Length: 524
Image 1 (tube, rainbow, N blue to C red):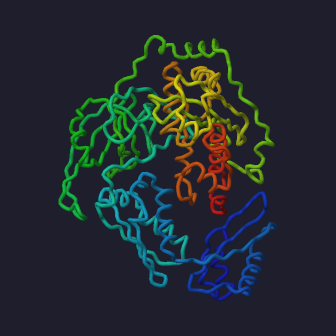
Image 2: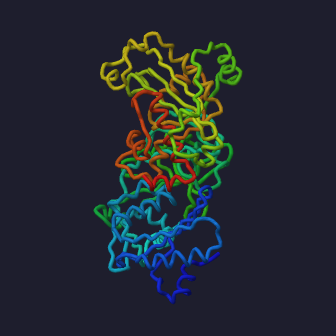
Image 3: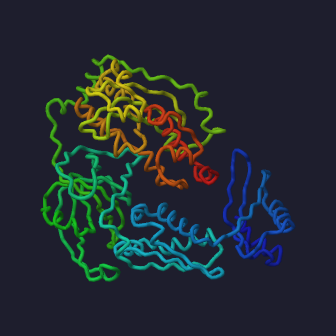
């Protein structure tokens, strides 16, 4: 491997010792190798003569028959840019800390090329950062991006930890986890949990947002005193216990806000619970489950019809007269998505994915009804089929909803019942990953209400495109579908109609799963 900086300095007697190699990108299809150098912000500009000299030398140095492009980028020590890169570092390396990170608890100052970064965290988070040696990793990352000497100061500050953290659930995507059913009896801590836990034995490595269920044992409460900040002297609680299911056990930790202490104290040993949390290496070096959502659970007991689930479902599908016939979408109809053939990662290339959206009579799945389902199927990186149907609700569509969706009572009066639409939709989606925009918090609740009523095991792996977008490097003011579509340079026509929203969401999901998605985002 050629050390370009060392070779330049040797060839030109350290004339260019202020340069730093930022990146070398080889585009195989275009046969272009792009080499980007950083130079300090104190230097006004690299002269054309110097650029030509460097270009000529490197083209002679690298034995490639392809095109070599040399670029120069000024290393601006801008506080906003540095803060963004600090946040991006935690997003890429430790998703479990994302709820604790914001521009408000990060600041930087610099003098010439000496940069000091101050990050304030709760004492519990600081312990995790030390545990994973993230300070050193962050310093190394920033040193790659800027020409500067970095000092990272981690400051303990209780005020940076909110009393209640509602982090988004990330459903595993590339490998379908083994899951089983439990019934949720009562929500205790945090938001709703999808009652499909994984087996503890199957989780042997750190992973974000894992759903597990089991009996608790060896429950302990440890009090500690906040040392600094406005709440200095205040006591808080750390709960630890073992969680075991039929496959194995895992040690659990919950940093408890004062508002939840009474609830946690009421949970007894041998209580069956279901949780959402992050699996991380604990202080003892063992895999530890850091919880943020807890609900009481009960075993899922199958009745006679459920015991013969597969037979019953197949008979139901076989006896159902199909009423919705998905359309094949010709390749030409999606040729405008991207200017050229794009290589997708394994998630898009190796999976069949159904992206769907629904329109409803209101927001509450317990009292409101589905009026339209629209969906597309992605196969091997191409949108191949369309599923679209109205559904006839039992009650009239409120006028304000009609104005929002442009779906009137007249349009749905002769539509099929939602049960018939769902049977066709279920059959069409079997074996596919399910996706959509913010479907975990909305669409899936409506779908599950109907499938549960019909006795259909709608247990496809779920990937919420809204969460994928939030975890990406899109620079946007918010994460509404229309805003994300625009940020990616895509189009959304006829918003608030199910098929149009589903098609736009499919484009977003594909764009965010390109092998060169980071480059594409940076070009926007």
